[in-house]
View 1 (cartoon, helix red, strand yellow):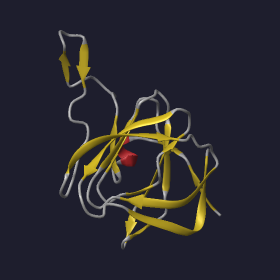
View 2: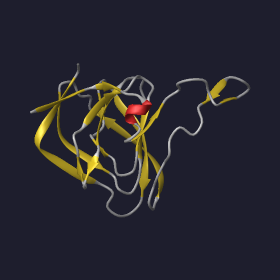
View 3: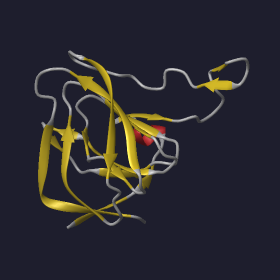
View 4: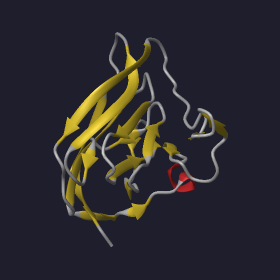
Length: 161
């Protein structure tokens, strides 16, 4: 089984796959009578047809090492995962190589960070590392097929350094 070592996530490292959303740096605006910093327009939502919707996902926590045997993608829309607890989670992505996933990469977020996968990005399933695994998800709501799965012949083992 091939191994994938988890990397700390960064905006630059994650950029080929999507947007890393956090409160890094100074806020873009101060609002609400000076009591709130607004970090404005941090992700690009991208949908073919349909509309943006907000759903809640409640995923079981996982542990490392983690067996990765499948990735999926959504060709009709981007997908943002917003943790509703202040816990890190595992993010697995893979480049597209002629319609199939290439070698996956694994990142771990910091508490309070959000990811938004670009439309068509191969990614692992929602993988919280701590419970509860409650997330708000912003993605495409609409007709038609918007899920492709790819099962690896030889699974990967995702490990911490």
